[in-house]
Image 1: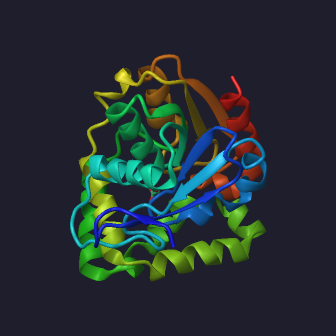
Image 2: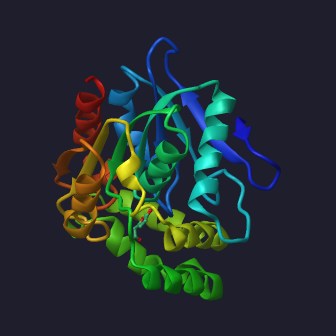
Length: 259
Ligand SMILES: O=C(O)CC1=CCC(=O)O1
């Protein structure tokens, strides 16, 4: 299996598609893994070589029991790109994945060709994320699963796709609490808000009309105001847009990436 990084902090990645097309890196939210993107893959792989990475502490990646930092999570993804032989790529990330993507664009502008920032933010409530870290470390994943599910998916989607919602819930409950807490600490400590004005690559900000975690108001609108020349698309989806609107998300990203 393809892993990159030092022992205990290795990230698992999967590369697919032709090598004569541009590379696109796909990053997951906290509490999910690379499978989050499954519904969008058939369209995306027609024109892009896809590198998916399980964020540290998630999926098949290693779980270190410590606070993670956004810069370290970004370095993990560059390590996966190195392992896959990719020098430059467009990067798309959902929520935490979008935060990591912004950190990547700031750290290595030479390696990030474009950003798709899906249902994400540069500033989350520090107290709320601090409480979440403590709760998960003290009581385990069951203590926050209802809160997280309520922010991930809309009631309409849960009613229409109960099996998908059950899978997401099961993954969340069964994942390593230390992996979730490590990433939650990175969200708590992120300092993107004052720096994203320096992002220089073409950027698409995707918001979800039903997203209660990072709604347009206060989150998407801030990204659009700060990132020079950023474009906006609003989708009929909650936070996990690749689940609620996979085809529309893929079409929107491809339209942006073809420019
Ligand atoms: O608010 C939530 O629980 C959803 C979320 C925030 C960051 C992320 O990756 O997911």
